[in-house]
Image 1: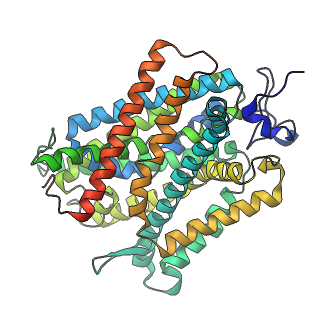
Image 2 (image 1 turned 135 degrees about the vertical axis):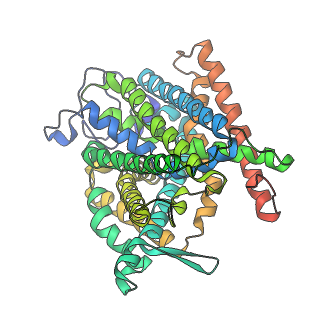
Image 3 (image 1 turned 90 degrees about the vertical axis):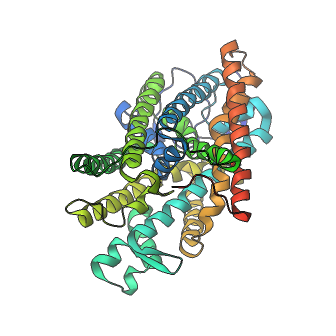
Length: 459
């Protein structure tokens, strides 16, 4: 009997199969969670789960990023990051198979030991926790509204039913937590979320369809002008500000933390590469369409969160109805994205806190304790500290690029199994250079904009 490799030796007390923290398995072993007769996830379910992991709140920031870069460079940037994402995911898949690791942190541990694994898990926790708090903030804004500079923007529930105790932000978030999130985050297999993931992707498509419809109507009425095809550079500060858009696009493609959990449950794990390609094609199409129609429709008036543009007259009949439909569909979309991002958050928090315990799926007490603690923290953050969004602009430019590009590239350059080709090394160095340089410029520019008035790109 061969010994377990060091990276996953901490799971030696595991039962034979585990949906959340699977140990290393031989290639001919099938996945059967808890011996419950589960014979593996389908390809379509995996595509929807991975697509939902990708398409979260980031979709709403892309039109503003593309508008800053100019329509042509912006759309090209989306396609370029999509190709880099596919390369980085391929690295994770190849090195996980070579090292027989069934977790992303296990692959990092094989390359860099326990310290590398812990750093990666910390980055995933920071990234996912930040995203989930932002999701809750957006859901609160959509349902109950928000106040900016003394002006209150009403939420859909508040507009429909008036101001009552049960239409306040805290009450609505509490209701959403108990009646939507609680059931969905109680699943111990990611495949259990395949139907809600399919609905989530459909709701994102609804947003694209509505935006495209509004653009077509306004084009027919001659109300839309020529969009800006290239960036508008006013001064040096406006040039450096262009780099702040890259982390927005990078964050929109972060799904690496769920790649191996999804593959672990597949009936045929050899289909994972095809699943990744299909998901990235679907999400890139949605991103390009959203950015294109958003920039065409709103131009230089495109807000950082394009959802805020759907809070007034769109210049077509039934504008108010379409505004509400967009906001409700997007709010529901985020509610369904939430559990799949929470899945890997819980997995990595448990890995950090209880590295030598049995897999969390086999310990109900620990499973629900970690789940309740994380939900309590997220709910508190979204309810009482809505300005926390600003803090996570920095984590998006740091933790997200580490999870998506720096760690896959570093693992490839480390090349413990000896499978990296020369081309892999070139791509890895390019990933690290782009990730470090753009993140450094983005964080510096964000800090600069806090203390100085940046004329930047003006309308």
